Length: 397
Ligand SMILES: Cc1cc2nc3c(=O)[nH]c(=O)nc-3n(C[C@H](O)[C@H](O)[C@H](O)COP(=O)(O)OP(=O)(O)OC[C@H]3O[C@@H](n4cnc5c(N)ncnc54)[C@H](O)[C@@H]3O)c2cc1C
Image (cartoon, rainbow, N blue to C red; front, side, top):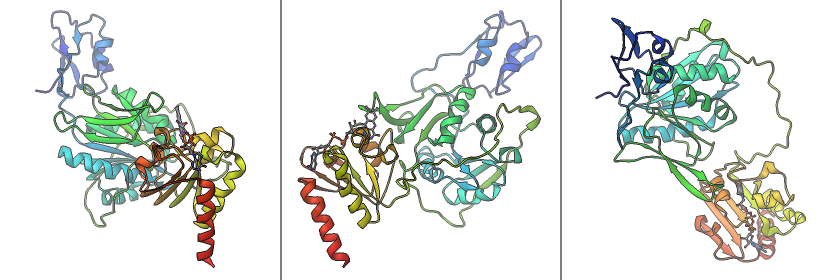
């Protein structure tokens, strides 16, 4: 049975206050009485508005979920005419979740001149793509993007919505969750389906990264989560894969944006190509002082690698924050990650553990970095790294 709000016929005055406030057009007044239809999502907006307290949101039993939501949806982020890489990573994970639930995978694509990207999203796993292609969406503004995505979710009712924890995702996905009246788990590091309840298991570091918490959203739909770039793997494209492309009409006259994009100014900071690097050599507090980072830079130079660092090294002032890997730094997934004098605190590991191969050099055989390392060298970095440099140079001659 579809769960709906309950209306007390004796108390209801038929005032229609609930009708205009319902975001899902689930209420109407018939013969002087409010009536609810199967569009109800139990969001509770009507109950809050009812001046006589005639509407009740029934409590859900354990494991009971609103039934009129189905499918997984990925917000297909694009910026300046390019689909963000995190979108492909989310499509890969979204496909896995949708297959487990035996439902379809959709993508929501917003922007100006973006319809041509829809086919690519289908090749990366989407079954259908909802597109709002309009000049008003040329540059990102959180109010217009928020309104459009909210409308798509309200109309097509996915049970799960995934988005990138990028600067765009972070700035408007919480607003969408609030408008829909559901929960949001930010910065997830893992997503899975509970086989028994079909709930989305959303894992993320909690309490300063000291524990990994698995969060569920049992009573509201959709279940919403954001994931950082590089935390999930990108899948392979399947050229020629078919799917549906659905243009979504928006009544622009109804929307009054509060912000206007005047200009895009490129950030002028130290450019560190950590997120895109295939090889990263990272140094930690084991380096003992700033000048010893020269060893990390020299090894990185020989391997054509980017230089990473633990927060320990950044906090010590030995290297800038732009190099920090981890929960409060960058998330990376290179082919090779060499951790030198890094203990492997959980906050560091969440930022690099999806590297294909991890090499750790540490004097402490019990250092947690060895738990994730493919190859571990227990020893003094001041002996091992100069030897690696010497041998690499010898091979290059
Ligand atoms: C909310 C929060 C967010 C955080 N975010 C991040 C984050 O984004 N990234 C991050 O990295 N940390 C983060 N941290 C900090 C994290 O908990 C650790 O304190 C930090 O990662 C430790 O850095 P480190 O491994 O360089 O230093 P240490 O833990 O001091 O480890 C140094 C290691 O070097 C080894 N060593 C010493 N001498 C040598 C030698 N001669 N040769 C070889 N090995 C040697 C030691 O055995 C040791 O294992 C965060 C913490 C909190 C609370």
